[in-house]
Image (cartoon, rainbow, N blue to C red):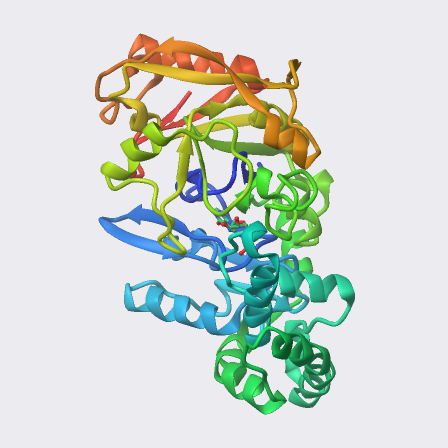
Amino acid sequence: MNTIICGLQWGDEGKGKIVDYLTESADLVARGQGGNNAGHTVLANGKKYILHLVPSGILWGNKTCVIGNGVVMDPVGLCKEITTLEEQGITITPELLLISDRAHVVLPYHRELDAAREAALGKNKIGTTKRGIGPTYADKANRIGLRLADFHDEETARELIDIRLQEANETLTRYGLPTFTTDEVLDEVRPAIARLLPHVTNVIPTLHKAWKEKKTILFEGAQGSLLDIDFGTYPFLTSSNTTAGGACTGSGLPPTAIERVIGVCKAYTTRVGSGPMPTENDDISAYFHARGMEFGATTGRARRCGWLDTVLLRMAVMVNGVTDLAVTIVDGLDERESLKICVAYDIDGERHEFPPATRSGWDKATPIYEELPGWQSDTTAARSWDDLPENAKTYLNRLSELVGAPVSFIGNGPEREQTIIV
Ligand code: IMP
């Protein structure tokens, strides 16, 4: 079954583990959006792997992994990642890792432009990962970006960078940031591009052949639905379509090829960076941080934590067309005496079942909670639905009812085997 896995919150839902779990039965694992702003931590065979751009299917050694056109690709970052994985014993060949020739390239000035944009926003800054993601997507939309295919011939790349730097350097000068010469840019990325070019190809025929041969294709989403450029908490979000549609536009495999959409959410809510988060709660944040949990894989930043927010999830389930929910880190709530679920927002005295579109709406959104008893027992050894405490089942059933999708997977620990199939 061709499947898209997407995050339903603000990223960091534990998608990597669900992807890794489902990869066993997949032939091909693909990414269609985002860049090395993402960070997936996967524990497998007693080792810890952190993946940013490479699909986690690579850990299996026999899956074709595809980085699609919708991904923005930092060549230096990707090379570092490949080297680290190789040092950990993972094989990465051009047959196992295919990178779309249409993927846009993150260049050194994009990272500086990211910093410039954040400086310009001052206290309204987005809190980006500073990986140059927004400026690279902006260049793509402005039709002044460079795609990997442009590097097949360095002269083409040189001409395009020359033109782009005229304006980019003006902006960087205005913010007192380092400017670049074309040679500096090329020198910085040349070895990495040379390392990657054998992997660069038109991935569309590969994807379609796999589809026609009824192979199983798995799309691994990055970030989460509330960071989607269209459906997220604008402007506090990332610059790609993180929702299910992004997998198709970002790869060349059409919507008619997709049979299942798995939406991944934590049993509570977290977010990194700035922007609205109505259920944010200092007590819950302190609780997780004291246990060494909820620090970002990419930037190490402490994540903001809060109660489960089904207003957000309800919309995310709709726009992604979620057929199955995967609820992760249920064990994270094991010790809590009681649990709150946000069922709606109060905005100016009115009840809202869906997120607002305005910034003032977000500012005023006050959660309306339902309270459920906790289970106060260790769920990490549970291997089936029946092994779970009654109160955990009630919590998960209520979640499913409130958001309108069935719970099919439950994560109750970081290991591969700590995944319950419902
Ligand atoms: P950017 O994607 O670096 O431009 O960052 C934009 C926003 O998305 C910031 O709030 C980031 O913290 C957030 N973000 C980007 N990637 C991830 C991710 O993989 N997990 C969680 N948040 C992310």
